[in-house]
Length: 358
Image 1 (tube, helix red, strand yellow):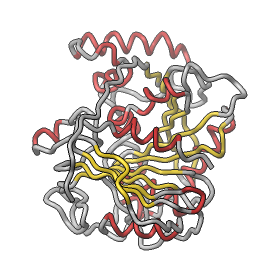
Image 2 (tube, helix red, strand yellow):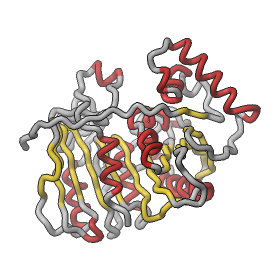
Image 3 (cartoon, one colour):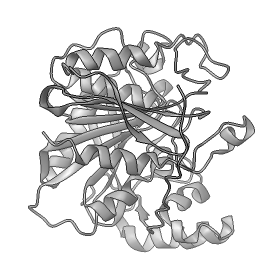
Image 4 (cartoon, rainbow, N blue to C red):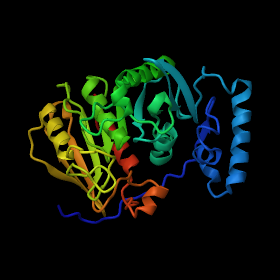
């Protein structure tokens, strides 16, 4: 497919603070945590950055710094804990400063990739910065790793292959996601007609899995560099689908199978498999048409679907395993992976979500 070129990029420089009640430097190095917490200090040295942000955390958190019972505050990323299955689980929540108690707000759930954390996907997607401007609630759930540890975590997406620790152990991540939404809803009035999910890589697979298993919960999902990895999708409830993928992804190849950087024993299903399945679930009648042309990205959509639940795919020409618009990570730089700075996935995702209330 030919990719036409047109510039499409804008910077979001909102300064968002991070507040943690229980994350310690052992679980997230202080300078890395501080760079999420205090984006206005990104140019500072690691030592100065850490000292300033640690001092800010100490003043903000007070004597209950290790408490797992956290009141919701606005303008801060706050860590919360809950019991789910056999585990204590955590998530980050961001409530914008414009939120007014009693007003129904949209909710966006964002899943990190395999080996990631809530902090890593917050740093990559910066969806909470868009939330501050647009007025929605953002949560970043944390998966589980080997032994139940939340560092370098993953998700049970009922994958065909490869099967990870969470899948072998039978972790109930669908139950966890439902518990997170319920926990948030106890504190904040959520608009049930505007609940959305997004994720990258294994987190994108989790977004697909949640849409399949939690019928009626999500109005739309957005998947970045993932695929529908389970062997079934037991739902007939339409959900609008946005899928963003690089044509040169060597972790989760567009056409499926194993790429140069795929997980061991990986044999990923092709992206088309999930798109066509959701086209049928959503009962889309029209032939796919081009709906967006950017400088390095083109988006095609199946329309005329039940409940306007379109199925849209955006291909980044030459793009690797990445969240377009994010700052390239060290591993991406070392592997010479193209991370588009011309297509802002986070902004595009939110725009897509706004067009798909229930």
